[in-house]
Length: 394
Image 1 (cartoon, rainbow, N blue to C red):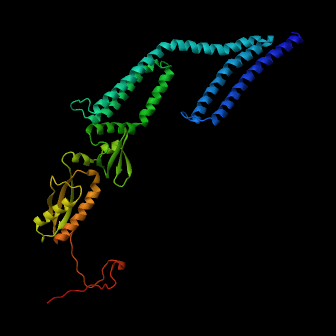
Image 2 (cartoon, rainbow, N blue to C red):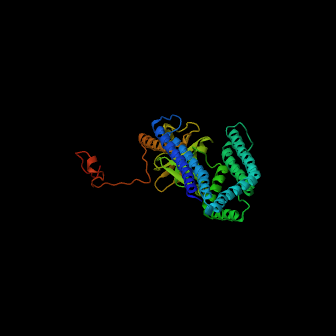
């Protein structure tokens, strides 16, 4: 190879690599120029950051494709120009060509399985959508099924959708890429064992939630008592129940804990004629019981939120050593205002007993002052206060 031919080859190689570099420089310039114009532009429908992310992805894809196309071509051209590397250029082309041909052949062979997956996934998707539509019709009352309550529609749809999705995955598993490979099956089995071991409590909460749903223990918005917590049900998710107490505290209770304790639903009592509120006072034996009954009923009727019908009533729950226990029972249709109604009822009980001249002996009242100073703090006493003495009459 003479010197003129060498110089010609060198020039050709330099031109090829210069073209390669120029193309990448042009892409980089276009990217910078586009981002500068984007920074000055006003985008109304899509945010500038979102457009920048999309353009970054596009330019990176162009860079990657350009590198995969130009670099092997430029390197092959360079190697072909010299006798010592001419055979290597053919091997270099084979290194890129054989994997691409193999991938293409695998893709063509996989097309029937891919078509089945597309059809099967579409069928499962629309089947789940049809379940959701049917559940909405039941929940709004458009479709009535005897013995099936409307509030069961949504959780039933979720259960059926999960089972349908699981069945669809089982059917589609052999058609996934590598689904028949022993390694793929082994990894899937290993992941399944890990999930089953680590999700015991989660599955327990899910099953407990399903039981609570179909026992109709409570609904969203009900005033309930779960264990020691009283509040309104805010949310009943797959795993937990969230309630808000009268102190505005949000409490999250796992479904398994809810199922293992007593649940008191105050709102459901409202639907059966009203919730009965009750409280007990102790009155001495010297007070006539008919008068005590009437005084307590009057106090209940003064309380806002207490129903006139059914009318309040009184039970005498105990005959104690020094007094009688009277329990006032009154109906309300406002279970969400229980705390305020109880407070007003207690206040009106004090007022009505004071007005009738009956002392509330809770539990007993026995006092003898022998001239000792009262225990009330001095700043609450009048300036001319004197300790009381014994009163003696003839």
